[in-house]
Image (cartoon, rainbow, N blue to C red; front, side, top):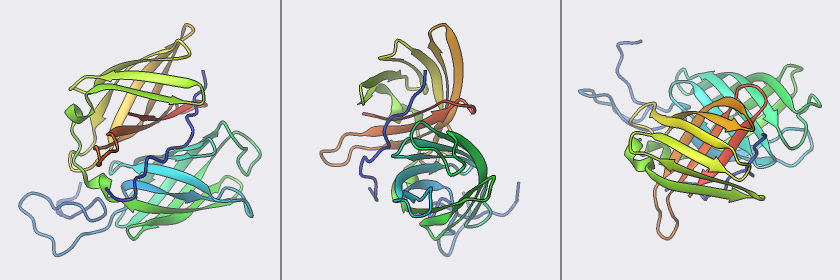
Length: 251
């Protein structure tokens, strides 16, 4: 099952080409094509570290980067990055929006933005740079669970997550639609969607209704099948593209 070890950052919640090739870090070849070997691309599921301040300890992070250019990185210290990237060859370049409910970013605030540049080999190494040019070295290991084909019925069922006094329970239908409630008396209604059936990255979109306010969140998810005595789980990372985000590990 690769490097996946159920490590997930603390939950943080407030309120065309005609050429046929291979992708997904050693994944698949198109129908009717043949490949002499895997072509590494930078989309994938990753676990590793991000160093946000020079001289500070590296922060454990997880990332989902889909082959459509959407991505998310979540840190165990309560930081979160929404990515918008391009994936030429084994390169990854683009921009990010960073949010934090933990430590301040190098610019001294709880929100930042900047650029990301990395190379997959298949492990991903690179740098996040904020608007002031402060570098944040990124080093992550590729997990082969990304090569598990995606399917909405796999997600069906009732799932829950509890951490730090916060709990969230979701019921997902075979078509990917879901509803959920949390311990803050908020309700959620939305859907998971297939991005590319060959790879284990799902898009998600939902409306959170809380205290009379409705907020739309979008993000990514990855499914992890049962592995021995370890139950299946779904990692979700989503944000409102402004100030709030949710990271959770449904089991």
